Image (cartoon, rainbow, N blue to C red):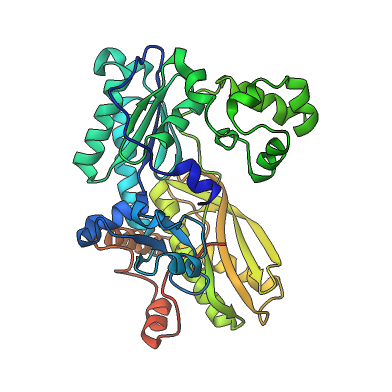
Length: 421
């Protein structure tokens, strides 16, 4: 069992909630989110090992059901290894549109409870419910309501940690997965925290864990007894002080709502290295189309378009260009990405991965005016928004650029499947 699995394995379901006095922070984490959303359309797979991710030889696992995790499968694992560990698993492709729609509905529920919602990802958020107590009850009651409404409204489950700080709330949700609720009383933080492995501490990666193990520090309680000066000498001033504070449950961070996206993008790893510029351009088109849709869905536009080009030897080149006006149009993103690809001088160099990203984001406003190929802006914007509406109703594969339709008809490889690094 891997280190990550040990930290995130499903634990025993907790008993009745403990005293939640002073515990206004909730950490809500969807259980196997991608898999859970897929099972809404594939209920016959419930209770069976299911893996979501790229199915090609270079595909990776994006999510795994708990039945698959029991075989050692986890996210970011190469799909070839996952199949070896769990050959009977059903492998489903990634469908970002579905996950985004369910996520948006879940976050709308969160914000109906409190405006203090800090999203960490599509399936994870902190909530500060101190201001909702008079209206909705104690934090544990609000947590129970969140779990019930997520299940009733979306058909999926979540785990909720309730604590006095963000760090302890996140640990609590991890310890009660799947489909659990755990309250860590404010006066019980040390008792909860000190028996845990040092790898539970935020900031302890594999290298730091090895250093702590070499020092004989395997639990948080053992680390807590070490003088801060000793930790700082062994780990560095900042990390040593940070871990000492966390080991005693001290975390001053507040829930910060509406954290803006720094960038929006997508990547694709090819099943085999690709040197054909036309195939690369079709991939850039698909990624630009996906990125533009995500920008419009988030209400953002960006001024900087970048590409990532990874060669067969894993050497990676990135190029970026800042536009004169922000854009959320896939066509503008695609044209810019192609120009950056051509300028990189890799048009005949085999590539294993390409990516497109838009940065310097801000509210889209009325209508960004950046144009492409000297063609009218209005027609492209209306066309892309119409595509958004069709995709929202029928799924993202229902409408796509003609070049990608021709590619699928010719059977020359992947069709919009997500890849990971």
